[in-house]
Length: 282
Image 1 (tube, helix red, strand yellow):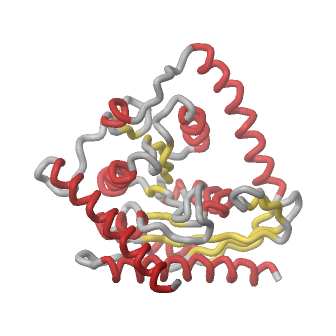
Image 2: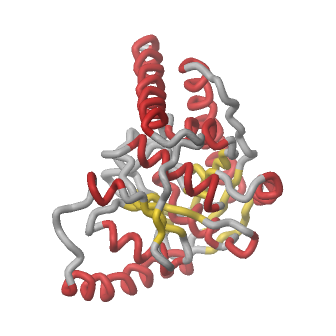
C-alpha cells in the first residue's frame, strides 16, 4: 500500500510538471510563462483565455446582478458574525510573515480548506502591513458572487478554476505573485479533498516563483464541523488560536521524488501548527 501511494503521488507530480512544461512552451519567450493578464480598471485579475475556454454559457443578467447585490451583504453579515462571536486569544508566528515580506512583496499562504475562516481573517487584517491577499474564483457566472464578497472584504480576485484548468490557474497564481505583489491563498487539500492531504500545486508554485510558502492553521475551543468536508466553524463565544509557521522555500530543479518530500513535509507542518494552536487554548 505504501508503494502504491508513493507511486500515485510521484506520478501526480510528474503530471503537473508535464502540464507546466507544455504551458511554458506555448507561452511567450520571456520566463515567467505568463501571457499578459488583463485587468479592467478597479476589476479583478483575469486571464482572457478563461473567457474563451472556461466561462459559463450563462451571462450575468441585470436580474442576477441585482440578486447578487442582495445576497452579498447577507453573506458578509453572517461571516462577520462568526468572526465577532469568537475571540482570537493568541496569534503565534506573525513575525514569519513580516520576515517574508522583508525579502519579497508577496508570499504563498497555505492552510487546510477546513481552516479558512480565521486564517483568512488574520491575513486580511494584515493589509496595512503590505499583505494583498488573493483568492482563486471561478470565472463562471456563479463565481461572480464569490468575487463580489472577496472584493468587499478587501481581497484580490484571481479568476480561474483549479479543477478544470489547473496549469493555467497556476500561471495566473504566478502572475499575481511575481507581477502584482498579491499573496494568493492556497488550500492544498482543496474543497474536494481528500482532507488533510497536500496536492502539489503550492509546492510547484513556490518552485516557479521562488516565493516562500507560509503555512497556517487555527484551532477553536468549541466548533462545528460541516459533515461533507469537515469545514470548521467556531461556535459562538469560543476561543480561537492561530499559528503561523516558518517560511518554506522550494529550490528549483527538483525531481518528482524531491517534490513529494516537500509535499509530505508541508502536510506535517500544517498538522503540527494545528496541534500548536490547540495547545495554546489549553
